[in-house]
Image 1 (cartoon, rainbow, N blue to C red):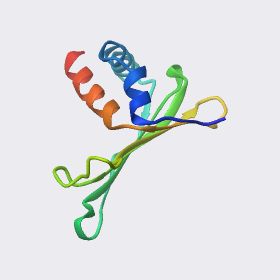
Image 2: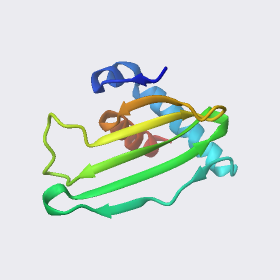
Image 3: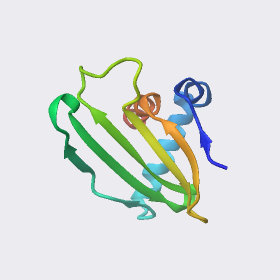
Amino acid sequence: MTLILKENEVRSLLTMKEGIRIVEEGFEQYARGRTTLAPRLVMKLEGEAGTFRIMAAIVPEMGGFGLKTLTGTPGKRKADSTYFAMLYFDVATGGLLAVIPATYITGIRTGAASGV
């Protein structure tokens, strides 16, 4: 069964301390050549929608793979909309494990990356 989270649930589940641990583990896996990262895909959207970006990675030793999408234009995003989202899959089965709004996660990852 796929878990579908809300942004407030993500906030209650992920602390900065845990974010630093996860980012550090991901960096370690990358340094050892145990990850696969796809080149970032960026597509221009028409009108005021900005851009559509996709980032994907496989980290087998952490149990999963997934992608994060970003849309919109900074400064023009509406507060009640979701512009960052993640899909997380099981590396053993390929099954979708979770759909996650990723605004909070993006902030944690940015801060954790500078703390590692």
